[in-house]
Length: 119
Image 1 (cartoon, rainbow, N blue to C red):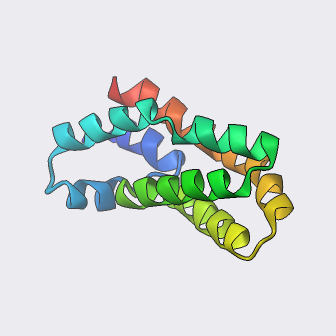
Image 2: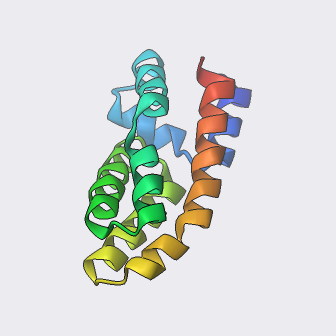
């Protein structure tokens, strides 16, 4: 992987080495899945659910994003979604909603890095 591309993705919270390992070293396959992440609708579902206070919908979207981020080695987002899922399971919807600004900021970093380096 080109050094500048890797540095940009790492700076956004993506563990490129772990992600490449999961994709058997195939940068092309990793790029394909990173681009698919940009088209995933769960972040939009999460923000809508957070705005309406729909805890069940928030849990479903956050849990899905947690899995995707874990598989793609988006370490910071994975940690945030892990905490949010647990908060929702603990029944504290407001605390989960309160996490959205931090999640949105990290989500923006990741999507911006992917757009700038993988398309």
